[in-house]
Image 1 (cartoon, rainbow, N blue to C red):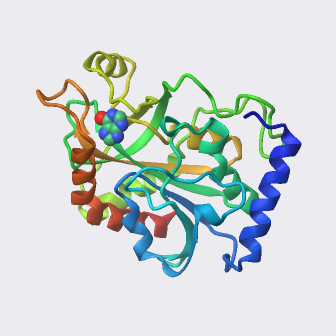
Image 2 (cartoon, rainbow, N blue to C red):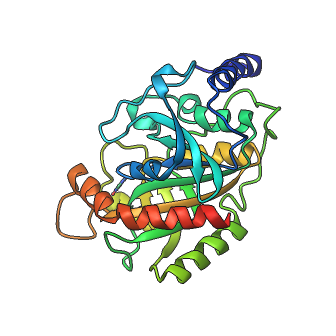
Length: 279
Ligand code: HPA
């Protein structure tokens, strides 16, 4: 459903009013953090957490996928007040783009200026391996739709927003340095979003590689477009949970994705926490 600008603003005001009335916010969060599939445990680090299930939040879509808790967690990580999305909304679940990106608009309505997006991704770059963490330097929108299509939300940003530094350069530097100081191997590259829910074919992965992709996934890009539209700084981190279709002579499975995510979750959580400190 495509909403007019005023309809959208009314919805957002309702959501914001609810969150503020809950006493959920101790202050305006410095950062939003979106946790990808199998990476929800970062939320356990949050101190003095205030947890709000999505289903209780007016106008929020409801998460449907196993492995996604579906709740907001407000609280403190490394001395920064954050708003964590434990579970996100995927296009493949049937949500429209406005629903997929609604939480990012809520962040903007609440005054958040920065966003860390995380995801599980398939490795397209032959130098990657399952278990790697990778900084997202840029993305390819292969979803065939753009979340900004329709009425421009002019309170948030321009009709034709610039995307030439969608993933903040300074934040990437700080994240890179953090990894170095931790002695943590870190890859970097371009994330291509396919809509899913079927995994890509080997031919699609060849195509993505030729287009410059280093990893593929089914999320992140819509949220990052909307975050940029609303003037947020963005940092993106992928967990390479598997090599993409056709790279290795084996089939892909959600079980493998979740297994690898769990295997690297501790490292991932440590990294994100240290990154939160320096952003
Ligand atoms: N393709 C798309 N999405 C994914 C993958 C993949 O190989 N791995 C984890 N999420």
